[in-house]
Length: 82
Figure 1 (tube, rainbow, N blue to C red):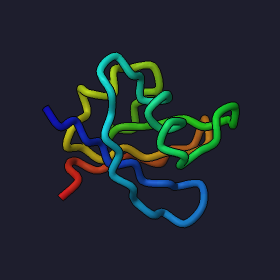
Figure 2: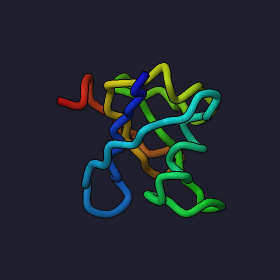
Figure 3: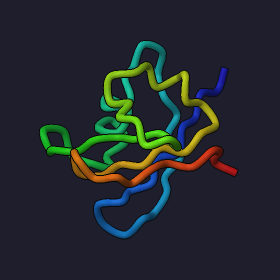
């Protein structure tokens, strides 16, 4: 089963990167494993409604776009990663 989540980097240039997520991986772990943001950096990931989803299972966002930004930013993700 292919679980791909697209992350939009709102910290730098708003580029999007599809990432195949692993079973049991949190959203934060998926971002760090992708190399989009280096481990240990301060960031937060939000869904299309602006909710922080850092500690949620990444696989539940398969096919969606999530936005990576600074904690406290109001950047939101997209509905789908078409």
